[in-house]
Length: 83
Image 1: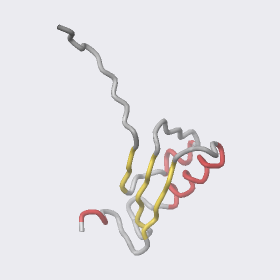
Image 2 (image 1 turned 120 degrees about the horizontal axis):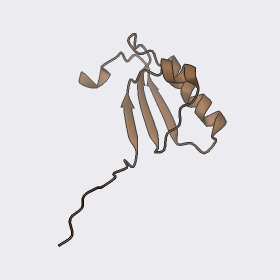
Image 3 (image 1 turned 90 degrees about the vertical axis):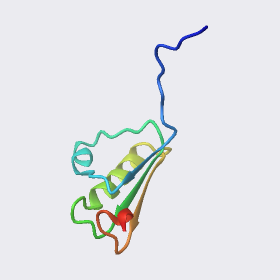
Image 4 (image 1 turned 135 degrees about the horizontal axis):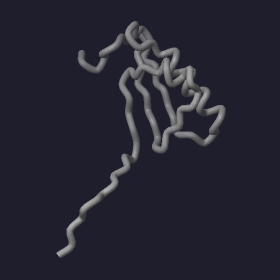
């Protein structure tokens, strides 16, 4: 009988709903090891989308093949998925 004592799992992708990107974007060192999809609300006043949009552009400029996508939904606020 084989017993597994340690297993390392790696997600295939990540989805972030209205993340706060301000700190990460300012540091300029974000790297994702899996494809990342960020879903943003254009009218979000808790975690404004501008930082995530800038982060996405910056990552793509430094790593042209990076799989990072930001979708900015017009007329959507923070918590749009709970409606």
